[in-house]
Length: 323
Image 1: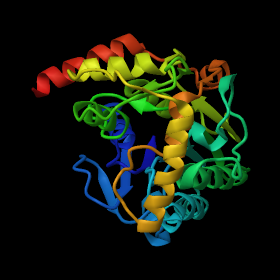
Image 2: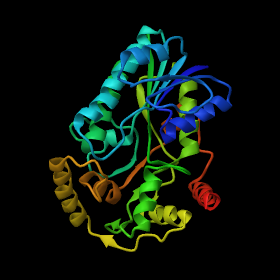
Image 3: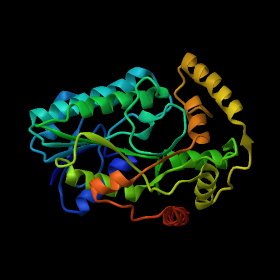
């Protein structure tokens, strides 16, 4: 396939690009900084119509992973990257006669703070989402799915809590806080959550690129399908990195109250550093969220090839090698 992938400098984007190259696809990547990949590269902002048009022309499928992923920052930055960027990609697909678009979203577009247990991909809820990231991605997913039609098949994938070796987001932040003694379990730590090992997320994206066309017009959640207690997830990630797991437990009410205060303080001061807790993070760490994977696996003809236990071992091996 001739594939355009946006966001090749992100962990998921780069791993997907490398997998596409291994499979021998004709790959183009679009992002603001050089990726170092051995393929055609277009440098530019995903919200820049000229850059997206140049990158998308003549492609068989676009995999749109580029996004602003953060818990802080002004709304206009999230809107430009996630909303305007999605509009720009759709316009480029239509102008360049690209038949298929795989739009990468997130389960947080449908998470309004209550537990999600064994559900599928519920509709994106712009009003109920928590935080600029989730809200902007909810709007973007709606825009993408509305573009689905005769000229462009659109499939939205929602990988859930992707992690693996070299991940600076989930793994990197958890390990750094644990090293500094600032990682705590919110509540009892018994809430069950799904996560997704990076190799499985990449396989799902490639599967979506292959089937997008016959399969289109809906959102699918992607995860390992192995819900574990949040306290266990944190402990296994820490032990894989060679650091002690969290021992402190903070009541959910206290964490949520602290997050409310810190959200306001960061907003007033316009701080860009990662806060110790936010309301959204407190909810994520204390609320069950795991998903029914049957429709995803059926439509994508995909199943995870790396179990969580295998993933933890590969993560441990990566830290051992780096040391």
